[in-house]
Picture 1 (tube, helix red, strand yellow):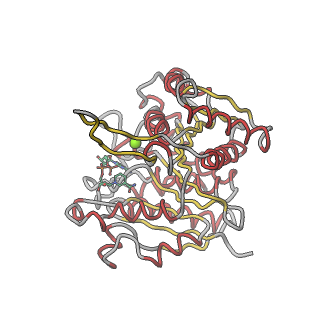
Picture 2: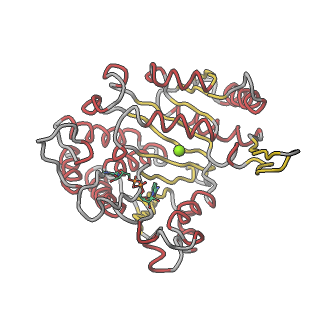
Amino acid sequence: MSNPSLLILPGDGIGPEVMAEVRKIIDWFGAKRGLAFDVEEDLVGGAAYDRHGTPLADETMARAQEVDAVLLGAVGGPKYDDLDFSVKPERGLLRLRKEMDLFANLRPAVCFDALADFSSLKREVVAGLDIIIVRELTSGIYFGEPRGIFEEGNERVGINTQRYTESEIDRVARAAFELARKRGNKVCSMEKANVMESGILWREVVQKVHDEDYPDVELSHMYADNGAMQLVRNPKQFDVIVTDNLFGDILSDAAAMLTGSLGMLPSASLGAPMENGRPKALYEPVHGSAPDIAGQGKANPIACILSFAMALRYSFDQGGEADRLEAAVNKVLADGVRTADLLAQEGVEPVSTAQMGDAILAALD
Ligand code: NAI
Ligand code: MG
């Protein structure tokens, strides 16, 4: 059997800096855990534009379709702000998401104990939190027709349409149930079936997928507005939350901030299963290229490292190894190692990007 394949796209700004630390971690798993990957690296975003005049070369796009998982750093930066819209760095990322048809966006909210005081909520509400929001990403009100601003009588009307087909709901529900089986085996589906027909269909289809193929997973339904309240009242009641594009956009941002710094937040976007059974997958930190700190060795590499942990768990069925990596991050934080973005009080010396990576490697050992 050949090794699983990984395409690494560091991108721009702090992207290459945080990715260099992930490369060390990947090498560690190869050397110490017998978990070798065939790693290739290529350009995306401004870096690709500088070389090829396009933010994502066709050959890179083709490789992204073939590999077992793509790991991306970040794209963009002031150098590219005046480029034509069609070649902006972000277009590279959008092209990946669109052509790989990544319909399920996974946003975990995990509270590392040492950072519980970073949260705007009370320590006991967030300590030990480990939930994940699955947001439908390619349909719903951001895409539905009709849309536009129209004349109606003597005034204008702005229209967007929430539209979901059964198959679109079916596939994101499956993604959520598959995830749940690798975690706490619990899914809460959120919509507004009380006031929206698309919500009624959503609830029906999620229930049907559950009853037919995932009866072992605990399923509940919640109206999304109540879901928002429950997320800040008692977030630990959840394991996997599955919801549509609009509610997911809002709920995942809210959930992310339960746990603090942008430098800590990983994400994944999954598509349909490939022939080998693995889903098409793109893993990336939530943060951008952070031009204000790029090139200074200040960036926190943990968001990107935790994105690789998600790849271990959700693309490579290595949940145990993902746990190992997350435990190493937890230990380093508990030991008080902090990049500048994690400093709550003055007088503590921050570590560099590379020092944080090395501390995590040492904790793995
Ligand atoms: P940003 O996420 O790059 O930065 C926001 C703030 O958080 C900055 O102060 C930055 O220094 C800090 N920060 C972000 N990641 C950090 C890390 N790992 N460690 C320490 N501090 C960190 O968002 P911003 O400033 O709005 O955008 C900057 C550029 O990134 C723009 O060109 C934007 O288009 C692009 N961008 C790219 C994204 C992507 O590649 N997925 C997502 C968001 C923005
Ligand atoms: Mg948003």
